[in-house]
Image (cartoon, rainbow, N blue to C red; front, side, top):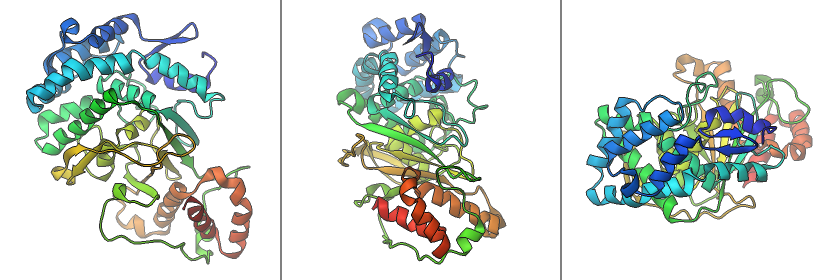
Length: 409
């Protein structure tokens, strides 16, 4: 395990330690998790207030700072006041112990199994920084364990800003309950709590992949490079066939398609704080998307992120301040050969407050290439290379995009 570069890159951002070729919880944290797993009769965690105290104790056992006061207030507010008594009792008597027993205590084993299956490190959990094209393939079970770590606010955060990583712990999400009077904040938390209810009551057998896609700015031996304005201007290829729907939601589409996440350059945007528009809502109803925030650094102009297989767990209505969790959702999407649901979500970030830049050549080129990066399938480069050369001579780079979209249909 010590020789794995993928594990070494992500280990500073995980709450477990590597010793003697194996992963462990530090002993004080292990004992605290064992107590939680035995339920409130042993752990004494039977309210949101005490839950927040237990999270602080866990964080101290991991040499992290105490839970911020506002976050502690948010945990108490949600589990003691916003949930019904019956819901809170079920959470502390059954759900919370199951999360500790089935997922957190098994996290070291789940990680070791993951790296064993990852083999040559090409799919292993690792930091995917700027310009580092690659794919991480996780089991849904490991994704759930990592999300419980985020709920418990157990991920180290000291080095995350320097690595240009987004927030991952749920402390800001719960803290916002105290000073954000909009019900949408509560409803976001309800979506996530519903997810945790579901994962303790069902078997997770699928996989989710997270791919950082890069259009290199300079020529490389393999792969498609960042087209310049001249390449687009000389293209004579028509757009591929497409259909327009005047109503409906992206996530409800019956046809298989790339589903765009109108993203922040930091994956997830305000999902774990106060945001509640398109990207944040998608991350609440498909919580496995949040896992990518653990290891995906912010996107540059020539980058996109594609996530395949994230399961949807929640129904909702509304948008922004009117967002509401409305109940359970059973995702019946078929699976591909890698065990992923056939849901392909592409995160592409538009220019931020571009004003007149969006109408200038540099702005137009940036936006077109951002979309191109999201839509193109670099894994099929060898299949496309002759087409690409031919289309550049005859119809331009848009021809490659047309063939790419046809191949995904």
